[in-house]
Length: 567
Image 1: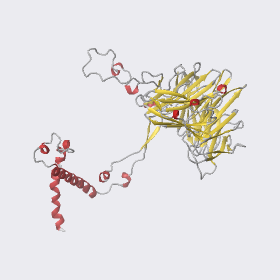
Image 2 (image 1 turned 180 degrees about the vertical axis):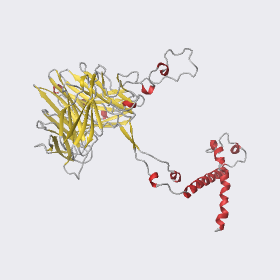
Image 3 (image 1 turned 90 degrees about the vertical axis):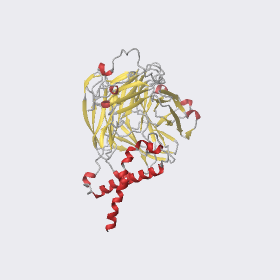
Image 4 (image 1 turned 60 degrees about the horizontal axis):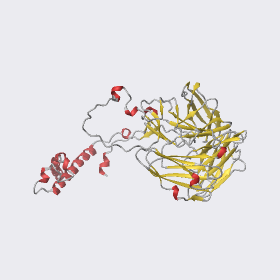
């Protein structure tokens, strides 16, 4: 037992050489690096030095971990990783499509951030325009003439991080109060991009609302602007009859180009057209692609917009002659169950369009959420959709005079097939009508907001509890863009039921206001907002679903783990 003890001092020899690692660090990776006289001298042996260095490093690590092993173990409770923390988002970016309001229409862009505890930052919307190439870097020599403009610090102007872009079209003054401004008044107006930072970022939302007075497409078109992405699904497009549908593509990035494919699906499967592939979008550009130029006489279509490179915004605008027009919102990600909220009680006609983008057929139950829960509409119990194809069915006055939501779910729960779906709604009055499209939506989650809401009972809320228990939500109407006092209301929703109510309005409302829905208990809850306005005797309307604003993110906690050095 004495021999191992006598040999232990041999470990000290290489340990004494360990400091050389620090001194030779600048040339440690290159034995012949400049500045290392030992390596550059004649007869220097790089291999012997590397061996000594590696041995010294190994001994040093061994000594460190040997000492660590002799220490008593830490308290297990103290060593347990802390729970993930929540943090508010610090930047939100959204993209709005080209207005497509023709020569006589007008488009309002409304920005809103719910009242929050954050500070600093800004919220602003700008047109998407190509950016000129960066100029050559200026000479390092000082300019002969000093700049006449004072610095931000000297003038008291906000720091660059808190300043809205100089070219902003609409700027949000403060969270909790919306602001509205007009889009570019031209038939070829570009798309737009909106950015919120700091205290403006959590829950930031933008609404785009277009009023058209022409005989063709007269009515309201509304859209909730979306984050950029690489894939978007739309169901319910068409190129038959008087339909003139456009796919709007917007690349807001000022530097990176994008390449996009449009994949079309009809009642006989995929529709191939080379013109729909490899569509180039330069930085800061928008394109509106006329669907009839890609395929004709297709009554029901699904469109999959895929960005091969870059990140884009996408939307589909549908115009059906004198029968009305609106934006088709992006559908929720393909899933076996889809819930489509926002069925008005006075819907005069409804057409359901479903696509099964996978490799298996879909057999789906059709259910409607009414005042008392889910029910199956007589004569429209199921729908079958072949793989890679689209199927559609006219549901007539499916609501039976009640407000509601539509749900599609697998007829056989053991055979779930992902689908995307949209429902065209028509409302008529005195022989004149307008149309809107609702699509599969996700629950509001913790909180969701919509920006452009108007008083005088022009705004209706549809709240559907899709779970197995009653849900309760808090609805808050913000101050108006021109004044008013916020109002709050709590609403209980029976399990499986839909509650429709006029949106609460701010006292003394002047202008437009924001609406925020927060889940209080129960759930999940899907929600939609219908905005109405009479346009030359036409009962114009548009419906948008509330979307979870994801205003907070989870940040996992970490702690040091020296064991990773041994792997």
